[in-house]
Image 1 (cartoon, one colour):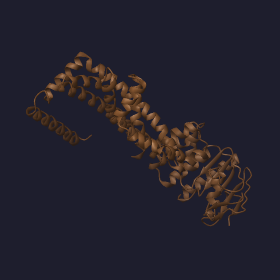
Image 2 (image 1 turned 60 degrees about the vertical axis):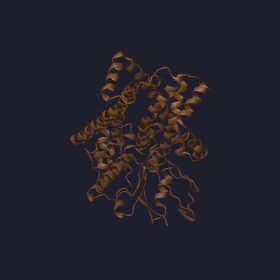
Image 3 (image 1 turned 90 degrees about the horizontal axis):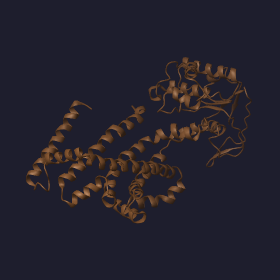
Image 4 (image 1 turned 120 degrees about the horizontal axis):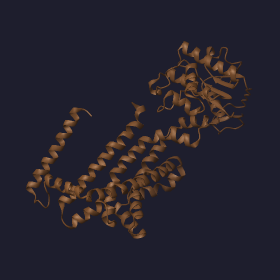
Length: 184
Length: 248
């Protein structure tokens, strides 16, 4: 990728990122440097940039906010993107992030931390070849963050996706990523 | 519904009947017949089967034109709400048709297409479509782009995205269009039947008007209003409650 412009402001100028299958990369940098923009470009949501980006076929993404459809239960949110999963598979996906038995709840009945974990479970449920995580563990208590990180790591160990993650917290990256790429 | 609310509504109904009864004592019986006389006319018409026949015909017209107006209006409204160029191009048309009186549309449809069932249904639907367009256009403008991104990232098909992502957001607007549509459409159907059909409640009202039969007019009108209210309460209100359950 060469650059992305917001009016007169240019971000990601000359930026290049290659992530191989099975590799996990953290992107860091000051606020406004273009980290979330990079994820949007990689997800195919932003085409107004100069350069080139390859979008993988099966993509799992955790946005900055949980972005669950509020009119669907947690289980239905997962089933919508992963229709091949059985109810037991969906329950297992929720259990992996510490939400066993919570699938019937509507997002409005979940705490922010629980909704975030459902969003992570949803991203993993599609069996993605690439995972894009935008601050996935923020607003989680220590135990929940540990369990959710463990679920992501287990998925990565088994399925070897290309992972790109944005995080401000160095503790989130411990043992999860092999490489940290700063954006100036 | 709480007991207190039911009591207030019962009191309101009793007051209306009392006012009607009092009015009938002052006005000549032929001009404003008392409630009892109207009820007797209603029972008689129902017993003869005449009322049910015309009620059924009119309800079928209401249902057909309602479905037509809601379908066409929704598609056009969403298109105008999502495509700015279309909106700029056709906004003037929408305003024009919004201000076209129902009577004019009915007359023109009968003149152009003859006194046919199709012309009657088209006249009614054409009157309601602009209102549905305006409501759904507003709904389409408020569709959350963040959920659109979600649908794109997870590659939901068009149908899944429409059914599970867009439609739930449009439901409040659809319900507004449906409820106001029902309230408007049945009134227009009566006008259209009065002008160019040989059956239906509107046609019967025309006959009663020619014979100055106010009891007949009130009996048929009352029966139809009650049926429309029942549809509103038994059909539309539960659909709306179900669609909005997640907001509780």
